[in-house]
Image 1 (cartoon, protein in one colour):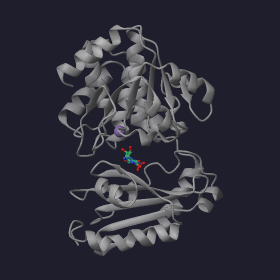
Image 2 (image 1 turned 180 degrees about the vertical axis):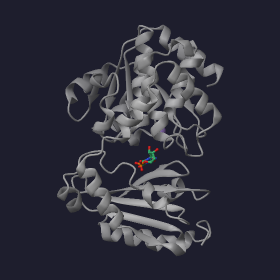
Image 3 (image 1 turned 90 degrees about the vertical axis):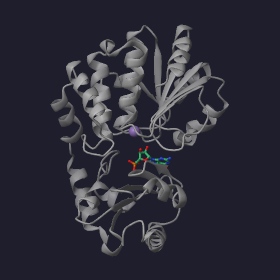
Length: 338
Ligand code: 5GP
Ligand code: MN
């Protein structure tokens, strides 16, 4: 974080503020971990803040310290509206376009509050007074660590902060295996363990809480997989009917997209998941190497993200969506190395 931004944040926090912290819609481990990490940090400094999430998030994140303080805009609407109306400082974490907050977007656009952005996605938009954006970072949690260190030094980090930040770094790096994981990431993680993050327990609480529904759905997703060897691509689908058959609940399909990439020679993996309620197909894109799924999602599926992990959506049927997807591949044959 550059010294000018650190000075701006210091000056903002030296005045009384009504602070609201917001992650993106469908928040993941990094989004929830970074919001809670920041909440605990501010609380340590005697600064009260609130977290408002646009919608619900997976159960496997709900044990994180401070979880009970999180307000859900869909469920606790009037309380959230009151907080947003009164907000003087809004911290947006793990996203960089207000459209990523779904229903919160028009409220944030109208807000008179000052904004602080901490995020590692590509192509940030320009809405914040302080934009701490770095696409090289493994995770927003790593950036919140840097933020805390720059403001107060790492000694202030409590066990609760460490636990939340560790969780987000772990989930966004695929347990420290993606190329965004640097020696600095490991140094930070080492510090978080010293500060009380129980690495083994966190791993267990996030990954070893499969429900029968999740494993059955994984079976369906693996069975539905289409492998297009010529394009080094594998994709799979889950229809609403399949989700309903196995009593899908939020978070059950997390990580399924990565299975395609474990096939030898596959560089591009995609999962299409139908959401009848929203009338969309939610798409997750993953790649290894140079093929930019951010560009692909942005250009064709109203999405974005990072070079090797991005999301998007389609308003067409599953059949038309996968047809469109397959038809796009020939124009990428060079970058897919086919
Ligand atoms: P996932 O596939 O797990 O939903 O998302 C992968 C990555 O892309 C995450 O970093 C997520 O924040 C980002 N992402 C997911 N959906 C969208 C989207 O619609 N737009 C943008 N800009 N990023 C997205
Ligand atoms: Mn992230």
